[in-house]
Length: 210
Image 1 (cartoon, rainbow, N blue to C red):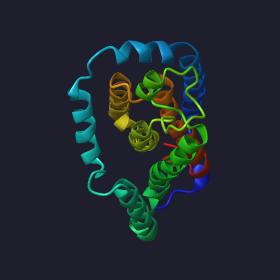
Image 2 (cartoon, helix red, strand yellow; image 1 turned 45 degrees about the vertical axis):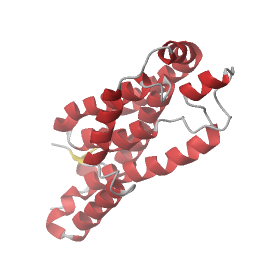
Image 3 (cartoon, one colour; image 1 turned 120 degrees about the vertical axis):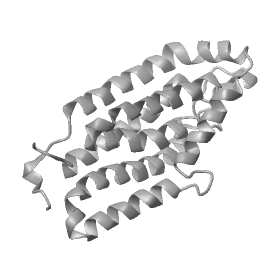
């Protein structure tokens, strides 16, 4: 049975607070952490473990099979629950998860193009001072957005899934340790997913009041 909009719980305020905190942390990382850490990591041989782990996680979303596999599956699921009356109560939750994933992946490409940030390894080789507005695509981290845009809205819709957010933390750590992304890149990915998820949750209210 479909639950009236007024009887569903509004988007958690804590999600918006988390987004605000992550914005501050990303700015701090840009100013203080990013460049010194990139220089340190550039001196160490990268472990293949992190990239292999990311590849395994990519398969869970069908990424090597088809770039937009996860987007297609989520949107198809959303359409099904909206079309079938007995599943319609689940529609708001599906809208939040599928919508966050699709919107974030679209915005990520646009933000990367607009900021033009070099990856840490590229910046170290070029020995430049600035990292933004060059010819790079580092900001925000696409891998972090890929997983955060599913798991963060899922945590809003189904709070019992919150332990899965550890996957997002792992991806953040992995991308930084292989010097593929700055700390602010991975935090920026979380910020984007959090803001979009909160906005959609506020719009459709996916949780029941009980």
